[in-house]
Amino acid sequence: MAAAVDVAYDKQRTSTTAYVRKEKLQELLAHLLQHVVYRMPDDPRAFMIEELEKIQLKKPPTPLFTEEELDTMFALIDVTNQKHISVAQTLNACRNLSQDELGGKQVTEADLPAEVVASGRVPREVFKAIVGKQLTTQNSWAA
Image: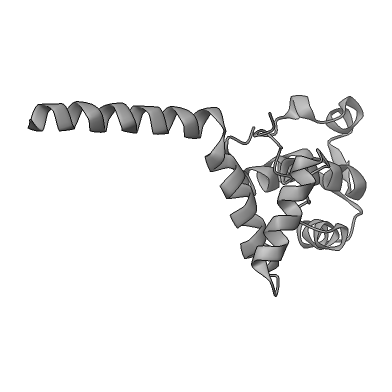
């Protein structure tokens, strides 16, 4: 009898795991939780419903950071106010902000515009575009 219960349990566990992977539920829930924890809205349920409606309507996901916050990040790196930072600083910032646990791709020099790599200088707007894109949860769970 115990063997039959074990087989049924294993079958159910396998089926559930396959469903969660197929529907990418971990990624979806991580997206929602990440935004709720960062934004701390007064009504987290309403906020999550809005995010789910955006996803259902295939609208772009809400960026995690605002333009102002990306400007602040850049300013914290550009401490001498040169209006640019190095490629190495940019890649380091991307590594530090990476979402590897959610399947995020590491930014490399190949992801940077050729003129930026050639000059070795990353201006504010390029930094914001790169980091902003990296920190936007991709809608990888859409059907």
